Image (cartoon, rainbow, N blue to C red; front, side, top):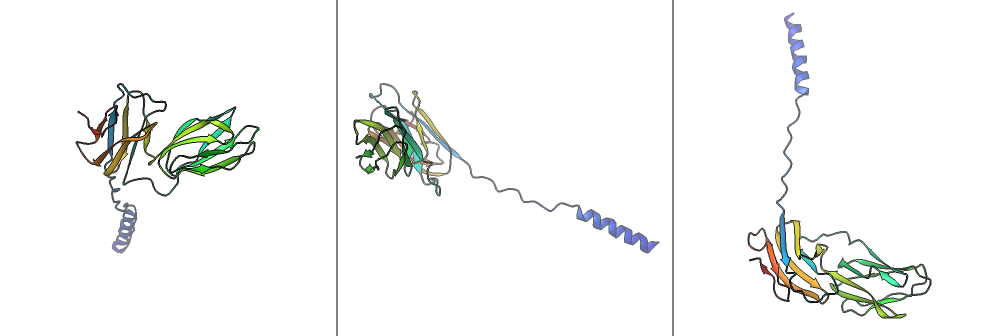
Length: 214
């Protein structure tokens, strides 16, 4: 009986030990995220035919995949959209929905291109490799067809009328914040994160350097 009891106890202990869960290491903590916010003063702005844009670019740009392609269609006598903002490296596709030929081109510095002649229903693609403003024309029409602002980062915002902007979920590091309008890059400010002083920016309505908000 003593020997049988010992065997039974050993079986029970073995069964209990098999149900003990293995130790689990806690997941690594994520690094803290930061935010840049600010104001591009909307009071008494210069006359602008295009929206104002704020861009933040720095050490932690997205790598690997290219920006998504952007399509512009020639439809019922106009290019749609006639204005767009894209990050540098974007492939721009022109689609001809009309029943006549079109050939789109740009003489804008850094983004010169002469597209192929597009027959009705066809499309052509150009790559935008430099930041700047592109004015698109057609060889068959005298008037400007579209305006494209190519910004240096995928991290950009088209500003609302109140001029406020914010870039959340930023890694620590140094960022350059730029304002863009119809004349191109206007104002710049450098921000190092984490920082308690320069994460809130103020850009005056006229040209000048960005500074900390008062």
